[in-house]
Length: 436
Image 1: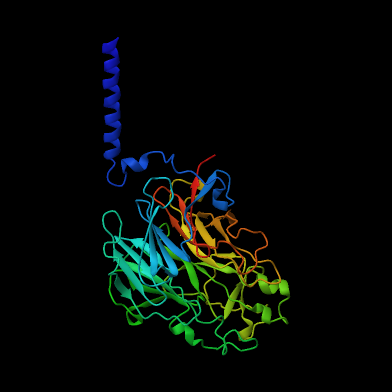
Image 2: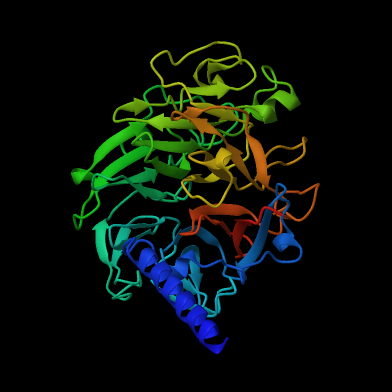
C-alpha cells in the first residue's frame, strides 16, 4: 500500500510538471501567474456604488486622487493616471497593487504639469498638458525609467481658455493623434453672445477645431511639423484607434446655446439638440463645425442659426455624416474599443463611452454621468446603445455641480477588466465580470 501511495505521488508530480511546462511553452505573453484564477479580486459589497448589468461587479481601486482624467493600464496591471491639475505638486500618478487584492496600496506621483491625455505604446508612456505632449521610456515591467526627464515630442499647441484638453491616441503606424479644440462655442464675432453672428470663414479652423497627426517618436514637433488630419470638430476628448478597422474614432462635444434662439426652438428642443456624435475619421475628414450641427430627431445636418439657419434648413453637403448620434449635452470624455476576453462575447470589439454629464440642459433634467456600451459588427455600430455603468453622480436628480463622481477616462486591463476614472471625486473604478 505504501508503495502504491508513493507511486501516486510521483504520478501527480509528473502531471503538475507537464502542466507547468505546457503553460511556459506558450511564450512570454502567457505568464503562468496571470493564468491563475483571480479569486482575491472581488467586487466591493456595494459594487463601488455603481449600477451594472447582471454578472458584473465593481471595486474602487483608488480614491481621492483629484481630477483624474485619462488613464492607462500596463500588462502588469499597474495604472497611470493623468490629473487635470497638480496634486501635491504632481500631475501623473502611478498606482500599484502589491498584495493582489485589487486595491492600489502604492501611489507615487511625478510630472509637474496638469492635462488630460495618457497612453502606453511601444515601450513609452505618453502624456499631455494643455499645450505640449511628452513621452517617458518604460522598462521591462512598464515602469517609467526617468520620471523627471520626459522627452517633449510636441510643443506650442493652442490653449485659449476654452476646450483646452489635448486628448491623444496612437495608431499602429508610428503616429500620434492630438485633439485641438475650438476656443469658441460656434465661432461667433463675440463668443457666446446672444445674437452675435457667426464668422463666415471661421479663422479658428486654421489652428484648432480638429485632430492633428504627429510622429510618435520625433522630438520637439510644432504646428509646422504637423498634418491636420481632420477638421470641423468643435471639441474631442474621447478618441481611440480601432485596430479592427485600422482607423480613428472620435466623440465630438456638440455645440451649446440653442436656447438663445427661442424663435426657432421651443425649450425642450433647445436642450435635446444637437447630438453628441461619433465619427470615424480619415485624413481630410471635415465634420462641419461651426456651420452645421446634427439633429438626432430629424436625422439631418442642420444649418446653425448663427449662419442663417432656422432649425429646419439643411446644410453641410460636403461634411461627413456621423457614424452614430447620441442625445445632446452628455459630454463624451472617454472612448474605448473593447478587445478583452473577460466580458461576454457581445462586448467584443464594441465601444464603451464615458459620458461626463451635462450642465446646460435646464429646464430639463441634467443627464449623463454614466458609461454606455455600443455594439459593433464588421467595424460599424450594430444595435442600440445601452447604459452599462450608472450612478456615478450618486443621485437621481443631479444638478450642475452636485454630482459625486463624473466618469472621464477608460482603459482595459490585461485580464479584460474595464477601468474608469472620475475627475470629480478622484476615484478609479475597476469593473469585472463574475458571471454570478
